[in-house]
Amino acid sequence: MDFSLQTDPPHVSGFRKEVRAWLQENMRGAEHLRWSASWSTRENDEEYQFRRNLAGKLGRKGWLFPMFPIQYGGAGLTSDHQLVLEMELDRYGLSLNHVFYTLARIVAPVILKWGTEEQKREFLPPMVRGEISVWQVLTEPQGGSDVANCQTRAIRDGDDYVVNGQKVMVGHHLPPEFLWTLVCTDPSRPRHENLGWLHIPANLPGITVQHMHLMMGIKNSVFFDSVRVPSKYLVGGENNGWKVAHTHLELEHGGEGRVGADPLVERFVDYCREMTVDGKPLIEVTSVRDIIADMMIELHTVNLFARRNFWHRFAREPHPYGGAQFRYHQRMVRLRNGERLQQIMGCDALVPNPSVHE
Image 1 (cartoon, rainbow, N blue to C red):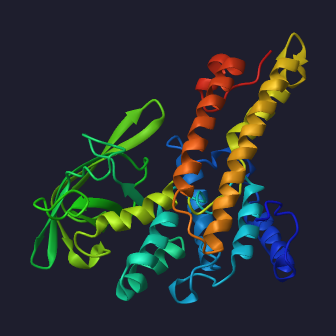
Image 2 (image 1 turned 45 degrees about the vertical axis):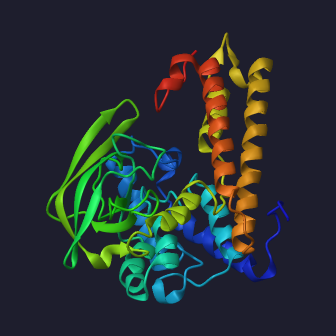
């Protein structure tokens, strides 16, 4: 396995030049949005709209899902091409996953694996072109990490599923076009054998979205009140939702691999360069430099996990624990780095855009 990612294969050297020139043109005037790259519930309308427009432009070129088949809107390119795109986007603090706030980057591969041919042809092209936003709607009031303990019910009634229940802590302040959710399709069946996965149009009657104003920004509760969802929106088959969940959760946890750096750490380094104490930049204080070194070492380890997963995915090698392993290590590193930020920045660590002062 080669972790270097430094030398382009001959067949993509020209592609990198094309991507770099295209991004220079289409990112012009958006430098101030660089640090909104990580998913943020504090993202404002300007940031959201810029990234959504950028997703549309990438999608029309097939670059939002570069490896997807051409018939579904992708470019039919190789993993090397996708790697080039990820690396060039990372220069702007972006990634294909986070070009704009949507779960389409996870939902589309799941539909590609589990959807019928009719579902693929109807559902995938708008996602792959970057035309729609999708919310992942999983967490319920009585449970978060225990996804199989799903209480939202979808009972078959003719050609529809009648959905009743509530999901919480989802989305952000701007509405989606679709809700991607796990439901209980047969309460009489055993756990894990009673679930289904629905791709629900968000404008159906009976769906209510209620903002949750939190310290971290805006999340939402979604209420389903006898929502009639046509059966064509069931992905993976009735009572087969847990198998679909395996694919979805592995992708969500990082099983597909990632390439970019953590913009939070980069931003902290910039803060230390500009912030002074007794006339001396924080970056020149030995104890601060030691802490930054620890953060960068751990960040590099996270990136190696991500690159390993990227390699396994595109080498088609089974690696069922890779996503969970990456996710656990990433979260532990973020907790430790959060403590380090507070240690150095104090109260400044609690605000999105801290002012630099003496």
